Image (cartoon, rainbow, N blue to C red; front, side, top):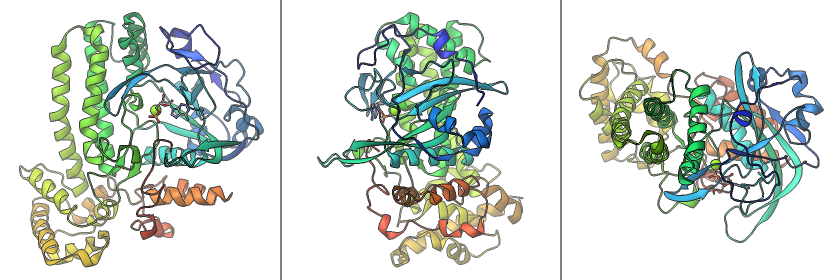
Length: 521
Ligand code: AMP
Ligand code: MG
């Protein structure tokens, strides 16, 4: 492998002078140098063909021992000096102080075809930011992160990517349900790839330490490389920067709501400054359309990070970022204006996104109402979000309401629950929807094509991840590859894969891993 290193973050920003790998509080530094833990027997399980191509790695190289060694942490890239980032954050609404990359180590920034990518190992051992944990990752959560980041990319959702999934050959102790019954599991390392892994928490850290100099350095650095359209280092530049981050964050959340993705841990340390979906932990996919659903058992009581609350939380997190950037701006009004606009702009974006899911190309005053009734109806009985929207495109303008109802019938989990009352609510909605379609000039065919581009046929359902994990634990990795390929084309009909276009099976309803995950996931 001949990777061209172009380390910008670690050459331009202040390093922690202490290079011992001991858990500690770090001051006035954006990162600490650290060496990945050497795995005892690394084994490549999967790599993403698209990501190797981004980096200029050939398939032969990806199958080499060198690749497995480098992306498991066994061997360092020549001239590389791995490091972990320092950052802070608000967790579940509370200030948590310094956090940092406790189990993530950046190998290098790599340049290929004028693009620079940061390569980061997740699960390669302890760092100064590991606090009381071990710096490791288990196989099941690494499979989830590897497959989901690639699936999200192909769904068109801004996200970090995943290059590789490698077993370390070491055991990791985990208490899956925090009930005092820990068990050994296989350890693994995923190599994540993104332009940058800078988070809201990087800015919060320096602001909280009242280290305005480093706050300014990291902000200027972020603007210079990732927001090059913003010129200068004035208050106005920083206001514009905040506006851009708000816009990107909003865009990301609108995508999540479109595909039914629930992040599960929207702490400010898990919010990318580039508006990328980052840190795939106890995330999940809405199957039954329930805005109150969260996959994260740790958040079961408050449901802070439930599906329906994600836009509000994004805004809350942006408030924290605004506070962090305040010392560079020293004026509240422009920040408040941006935060206030977030709410109204989100509503507009959401409405347009839902219009696209419904195949509406024009704007009518009552669309809001139509969408509101729809989301109410989707909650009457358990209804599969993905199947419902995908089936909707089969409806034709001239169809009778009963016919429309029949088309989406398959999205109901229990047909016995379709009482007369439920049926009436749906017939009412279809009456409205069909008459709304009549106002559109688009043909049924054109509408179907457009709808099928925004309503995925295949998403990474929670039980699919679980099946891939269970097989992989038995050393059968075929399902990882099968799902990876399936999810590369989530909007396409793949008739040989029709079996994945079904509702969640009954066994997965309450199963740990399928419907319930903890932060240790
Ligand atoms: P999360 O919310 O899961 O992204 O993690 C919150 C913080 O805990 C971050 O600073 C992580 O780096 C750290 N962390 C999570 N799991 C581990 C682990 N197994 N070892 C060390 N640090 C961890
Ligand atoms: Mg995190």
